Image 1: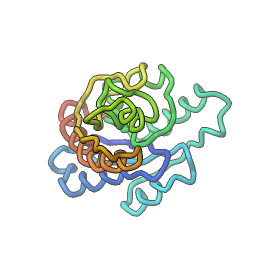
Image 2: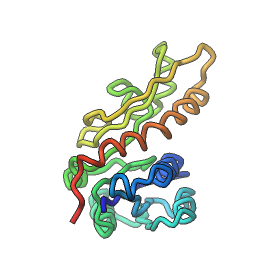
Image 3: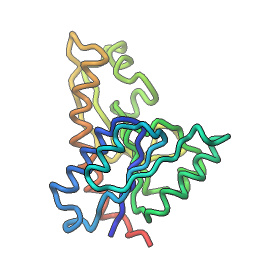
Length: 197
């Protein structure tokens, strides 16, 4: 079985979309895959309750309890590895990961970013797209590398920027596409991944 571990920091809407797609599309049977765990760096993350409702194992590794980014990442990796992951999915995980952590999961660590990468890496993507006069914005699923928001692109969706858009209204429309393309990208990637030992 290919185990998927999802990392979250907040409400977990992308995580929920992935879990729903896995159930709806029967990933256990069709892809020999399952969402085996959801891990948060925040004990109050709303997505933990959603995962528990779906009978997915949950863990918390609170980054505030660690003296350094390296110490946090080492503990996080230990918790992830208990679930024997074939794929580690960042879904609103608001921590910059160390190069050692990224290297540990090379080729099986993915993220979603609310822009059409390589445009607008980092934060405040929607306002930056509006300020730049973009006619289109969107979302990108990519493999994670040591360089922020730079890894190989797995899938993208395009969203028009409307004349009266605010960052909030554009973000809301982009989010609907995130919920569609993240599960789609994962389903396409899973057959290329080895079953973790």
